[in-house]
Image 1 (tube, one colour):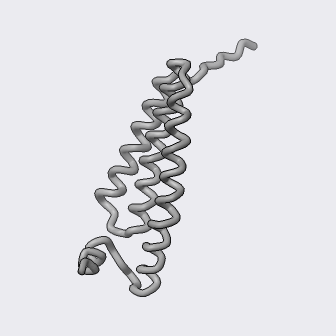
Image 2 (image 1 turned 45 degrees about the vertical axis):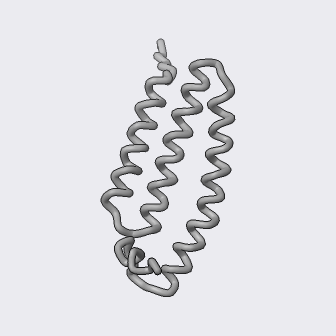
Length: 106
């Protein structure tokens, strides 16, 4: 029996990254829960990382992977600070949405 194996190309990865980025962008625009918005931003960052890695592999260049390393470091720092702030606000107020956070401006 002849098995047909189709290797994924760079285009497949770019289309997947575009779909992931679109889902993340729609989540940020539609949802009002800060935790969900935070997760959607992380999804968008991962879509950009996938784009950098796939294009770096297609061009046989390591710069794409180096950029991904720095994006992951920034995303980790963002998670530490942002998630801490969001969780502390959500502990004090229940049922919070992003529109309520606008009132916290001093």
